[in-house]
Image (cartoon, rainbow, N blue to C red; front, side):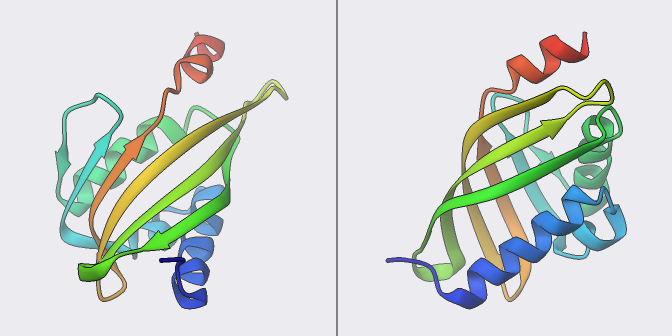
Length: 127
């Protein structure tokens, strides 16, 4: 079923914080025992480890914005959504990549996030 406006608003606020590269703001959405699986990388467990994983990537670019394309909600706090991430590199290059995420919320905290994406073009541009 299509996601509620409250869920879309939550994701929008989260991605606004990520676009600002503000770990304090985007990290506020993470449960202490959150798990993150990013593409084919090993699963990262724990809020601080997830923050470190995102910082390692976001510190290499000027910003990363997200456009939500489609958002669906299932029972048990499961949200599935398509997005387009636009990477803004320090040299002015912009690279847009489609992704799909499966997110499990407990309240308004991310308990599990699985991001299915191929960021090879970004990493190739970063060298």
